[in-house]
Image (cartoon, rainbow, N blue to C red; front, top):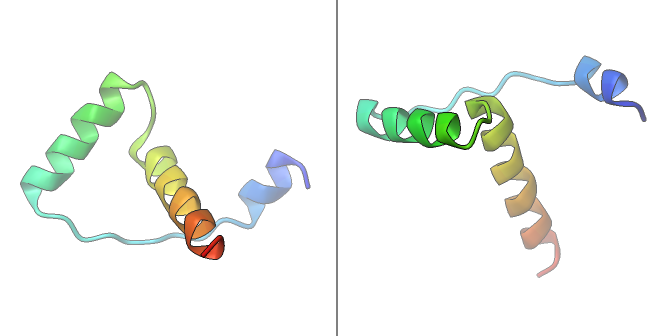
Length: 54
């Protein structure tokens, strides 16, 4: 599956954070030159992969 096809199949996920959590996450993502969305996706992928190995 190409990246374009994967992007066509993406869905929106809403996460509720307090202002401080959001600000910290946003600042760290900016420092690492990644978007909040990309980082959240990577965290979810890593977590789901680790759970499947159990």
